[in-house]
Amino acid sequence: MNRARFLARRRPVWKSFETMLAGVEGGVARRLSASEAFLFSRHLRELAHDLELIRTRDWGLDLEEYLNRLLSRGHDYYHASRTGTWRVVGEFLLVDFPRVFRQWWIYQLVAAVLFFGPLAIGWALIQNEPSLASRVMPQEALDQYDMMYADVEESDDPDDAGGSMFDTWNEYGNERASMAGFYVQHNVGIALQSFGRGILLGIGTIYTLLFNGIAIGATAGYVLSLGHGDRFLSFVISHGSFELTALVIAGAAGMVIGDAFLHPGEHSRWSALQRRGKDAGQLAVGAAFMLMVAALIEAFWSPAPIPAEYKFIVGGCLWLVVALYLGWAGRRAA
Image (cartoon, rainbow, N blue to C red):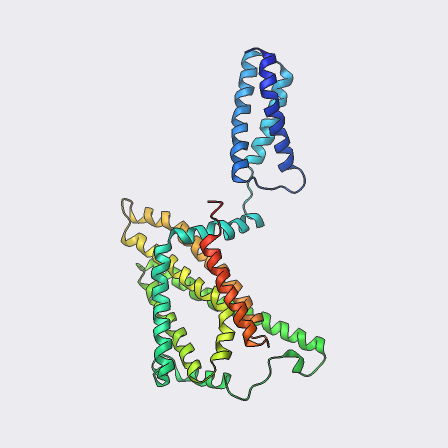
């Protein structure tokens, strides 16, 4: 092949690569899609081969310098670190986390049975026989629920409070923000306990799932036995979609860790823990994110003075959103 034929065939490829490179370098840097990354890496290899051919046949210093510059720019972009950006966080939440959730679906199923099974049984038993609640929860907690759902209640509407409207809403916002922080700390703490106790061969995780399932079911059954079903269910239905699901996912992550010790397969237990620990950690981080969303909903939306029927509609939609997110997000990227 002579120089003229070589340039006629390869120059359009170089121009195409240069255009692609200018597109990702100019303005706000963006990540390449999967197909673009494949094409980009292929062009890099081809340019390296072209440069070597030009040097071997001594076809011109100007071509060598041109391809050297392209290869240098392409290498700098392709191997640049982009960790810690919002795009990476978004890709984890929208692609990686739901994919890992589906990958370990059997553990999700087992954790769901261990959590929702006792929850449903405790709910049904105590709603039909409220006296059993004292065997599950301390009397102080039962007395608190009696006071919370008393017939004579103060209005939750911030406009009903004294003082100027601005001061009232400012105080209300500060109170809700404080509650959001409390919910994040409390719920994420439970999830981390469930995940961390997986190191105890999964036994600690199983205990945490069973205990919290029974406690939540007993609470729901007792409050409903008092005749406050609409108020209680309209309060929990919205944030429950994220909160309860996240607790199950955190439990599944702990069981993945525990099973790595019990069934390491062909690997050593330490090697099995390293292999599965990354996925389990991603499940735990995703669950923590869901619990933060649940905390915001629980602090600002759930107690808002809004008719119960609207809360039931929004809550049902949120349960559907969670199901679609975990079941379908990231499939195209996979």
